[in-house]
Amino acid sequence: MGANKLKYLFLATATLILLGSALTPQAEARIFIGFNPFCRTATYRRICTQMVNGASSFTDASANAMISAHELATRVRGLVPLLKPAVAHLEPKTQESIIATCTEDFDGIVDDLEVSLQAMKAGDIGTARSHLSLSQRLASFIFVNIVYLI
Image 1 (spheres, rainbow, N blue to C red):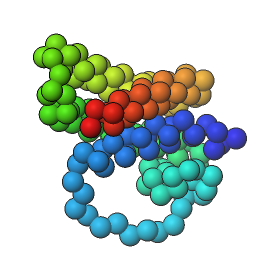
Image 2: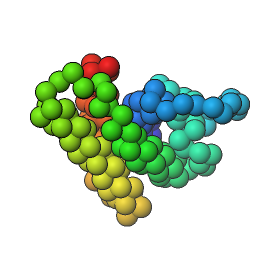
Image 3: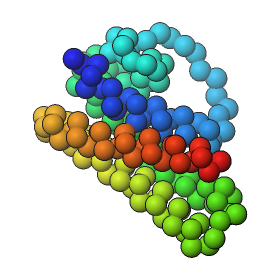
Image 4: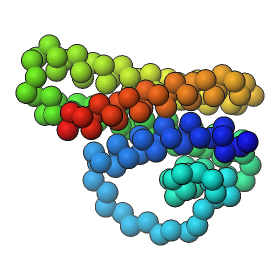
């Protein structure tokens, strides 16, 4: 049951991490140290393990994963202007619309992750799951459209 609760969070964050990795240079080497027990059923165990950051309880794992997703979404949101060359062949109004839509969507993802984290701290799991689901859908939509543009 715990894996089902984290499924949407990890899918959204994996999408954001993959997008962030594609857009930012990586210069550090990482040593693989195994999987966190909360990540044994995750599709992307290494990403999950990195996100839960050594948590020893389900609540801590969820909170750490949301914090990681929020930090990454905030960082990737700052990369939206890098899409301009990919849409340079389009009409100026269309370019502006695409950039504005991406900016709004990333703002929505960041906001939903903030609400989810606050709800989790307050013990409101329903609200947390609802906003995580919204952020996951937005992240998937953005990723598909960015891949299409590039």
